Image (cartoon, rainbow, N blue to C red; front, side, top):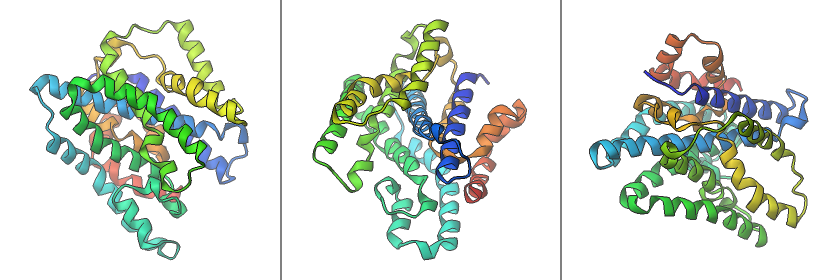
Length: 308
């Protein structure tokens, strides 16, 4: 089974960034200068998710001349729902005094990102909700309007910063500020990368160095005024979504196998999972391969999240 080691490494680094950001936020670690990199880790997850799911769907369409939506949704359900619902059941019982039934409903129906008053134990579910909404909408759009897939993604990529600017201009509050359109450009970049992967040249080492440096320095940019915020929104942030992908060649992209893609499509759930870091860095290849394919990896999420 061929894999892309760079994606494992990129995912491991992103997990560390997000975990470190949470530890700093809750005062377990005192390195405040690194807290901003948690958002960078989440952006990488969204780009990877867009890339992997789109590549999976395009391969299916190339092989069968269609996309089997019921089968796709069923696979997502079997891979995500069991662990997610076990987690929801456990934490709902343990933290019920801190909850309202609306928080549980938002989590169950994967709209937790728009539940701004959710309890802290459901805090990380916002990204999983974004992922689920993406899983629901993008395969449907890709099958229905495959001919216009590039135009749709470019419109999303261009329209997302405009949407955020409008929210800023009207001083919007409430669920809309955390809705899918606010982060859709990151998913769209991943989707576009999957479409153009075979045509992309290998990135030279010196260019990869500058791209990495830009990705590291960008979170330090002080968007402290309206003009600077607009510069960040329309000029700096969009390319950053591309930089987050690091060095990926068309040769690497073509080597992704179906089972790897199906497994990696869960990257949105891995943000608080220390086991993923251990798997990518420490575990032996054969055991890591078993853990990636085994339902046991889903069962392990519940105690890890509770401990965090």
